[in-house]
Length: 453
Image (cartoon, rainbow, N blue to C red; front, side, top):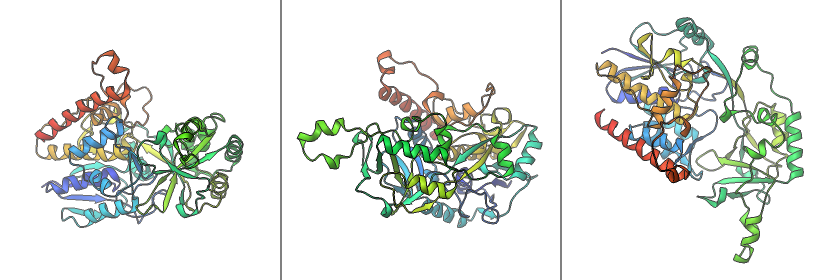
């Protein structure tokens, strides 16, 4: 039996390894951690979550929720485990990141068909089928080898990690639990700011010192185009004083119901307005740790502490993890990959995860699963699957492999990339109804695909 090499034990590589091993294939899984760390990971576990602990919405009328449902139908092990290690976060799927990674690591370490090799590969293996799933923190040596192999440059952008604080250190005389517009469970901690408090916060943020970047990061930084979903808060603040109030600190739909006891106070309650609000999301199973939503940053740690403790309710916040910013790399997929996630120039070489230009945890898992499906079909001499963009996964792969991009940049799941469908004008104007139709079409398509795999 031909061997399969998987380079990278992150979300995409772990999903692919388990999928193929479960089907009887022998897998060599290469992961350089913990011998060599990336600068962003903190452990040697497989499928480690580095940035946020949230996989986004689970609603089928959301692009992220639909993508989760599609890969759940296709048999994703990681999505199944994510649900079993979920923590309360309203209508989204957030996980106990350490419990999740340990569970995936246990599966991989105990699987008879997976051979773990903890070493850095500086070039592609010469034999067998290879899946490159090294993520956005691919080592410099392997990046150079890939660049030489394809004759195409790698593009750099920057990702940033949000800080985490202990719940017990939050002042709930000022902070309160609540969900936007009171929809779903009140799982988020909210810290409201007055105009004066916000202006003080903004001043500290814009005057704070940043961590000195390494030389290779400085070079990449000069060419960087930030992906909106992980833009550092200090970078976002440069766009103007009110940018954060209309972004991660928007106060719309957030109310502190504790101040309004009876029906006679309802009118006052609904008129309640905050100038800005900082939200915190549960980060662990025990609900002891909370991360600051949208607060990815590269400020010096002392500056981060000063900034966080300027937020009402976080005056004495105990910070268990500070924000970190790091360089990410991704290949020019439209020129390198076909719609099977297979290298155009080498049928035995596949790619998956953020190195392909997909952005997000669910997206990484999804492409790892899809690449594994096609690898198994390739080994069985079956026609490879090419998804139609009527599904979210199909639309995502169609996007990253579209050779008409003038300036290819990372993309996550969103309704803008899915193939349009005919529908009555009045339905098209109703976002919920429109997305339901798109979602139903996608689920039917994926279920039909599942039946023939």
